[in-house]
Structures are given as C-alpha cells and as structure tokens.
Image 1 (tube, rainbow, N blue to C red):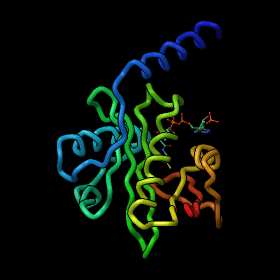
Image 2 (cartoon, rainbow, N blue to C red):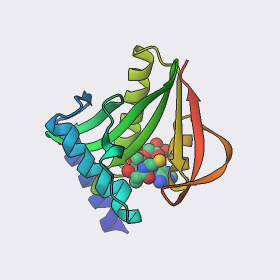
Image 3 (cartoon, rainbow, N blue to C red):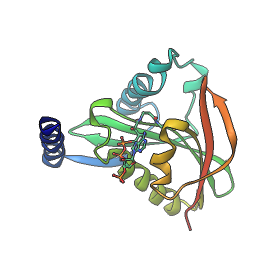
Length: 161
Ligand SMILES: CC(C)(COP(=O)(O)OP(=O)(O)OC[C@H]1O[C@@H](n2cnc3c(N)ncnc32)[C@H](O)[C@@H]1OP(=O)(O)O)[C@@H](O)C(=O)NCCC(=O)NCCS
C-alpha cells in the first residue's frame, strides 16, 4: 500500500517536471493520427472492436488533446450537433497516466474552448464506468441507460453558461 502511494506521488512529480499543454489538433496532422492510436488502445481494443474507415471521417469535429513532452496522452473530440451545442466524444487518457488529473484538465480546457467559440451546452454519452468522472465536473445525467458499442451508457449534459 505504502509503495503504491509513493509510486503515484513519483508519477505526479514526473508529470510536473514535464512540458504539458492542451491544444486543438489539426485534422490529418501527425498528432491527430497519433491520437487515433490512443483512442484505439483505450476505447476500442478493451471491448474487442476496431475503428472503421467511415468512423474516422471526423474532419468536421474538433480534436482537442493533452500533450506531454510532445506525445498525445489525452484526447477528446467535440462534434457540433445543434446551434450552440457540442457533443463530447472519444474521451481517452493513456492508461498509465489515468487518475492523475489529465482527463479533468482536458475536459475543463474543452469547456473553455466551447465557450470561446459560442457553444453553451455540452452533451455526451458516458460509459457507465465513467459517469462519476463527469459528475465530478458538474455534468448531469438524463434519460435511461442504453447500450452503445456493446456497453452500458448514460446521456449526460452540462450548461456551460
Ligand atoms: C475516464 C477518463 C477519461 C478520466 O481521465 P483521468 O485522467 O483518468 O481522470 P482524472 O484523474 O482527471 O480524474 C478526475 C476526477 O474523476 C475521478 N475519476 C476519474 N475516472 C473515474 C472513474 N472511472 N470512476 C470514478 N471516478 C473517476 C477521479 O477520482 C477524479 O476525482 P477528483 O477530482 O475528486 O480527484 C480516463 O480514466 C479514461 O481514459 N478511461 C478509459 C476510457 C473511458 O472510459 N473514457 C470515457 C468514455 S465516456
């Protein structure tokens, strides 16, 4: 138990020592292609699925990433779905860096980005296992549980104003 705590503190210290930034990735750029590998690893492989070519046609969506020492370690996509409304999707943090605050920082960055670009509502389909994560950032659930990519989800939303 003690060793684990030390290891976590060391990881946090390592993160503090590294150069990190959140930024929008250009669709088709090397970093955006790198982010697909991260999404495949975190969101698809564990449930035995792969992205199809059609699914990756996402040039009309905004790709926001958390970069650490030049590597994409966190990613999320924002898809315009109605006037002033974005759907947050494909939220993923590199497995060995989860639980260190990266997801939270990236979601906060995306909310600011949304407000700066005249969006005021964020919607998402949360995997049931991640609902607590979004609740901790002020998102609310609505409607019944449903299945997507074979796993249980809940619809969530947040008014950004
Ligand atoms: C869900 C995910 C994006 C969260 O990113 P993260 O960097 O691990 O989360 P953070 O460290 O920023 O956590 C922020 C808060 O949420 C909590 N949290 C994070 N993941 C959680 C989970 N799965 N269940 C419950 N709480 C969680 C943390 O305890 C933390 O709370 P605190 O601020 O009170 O300390 C990341 O764990 C991940 O990629 N998971 C696998 C893929 C996935 O489920 N994506 C979401 C699909 S909808």
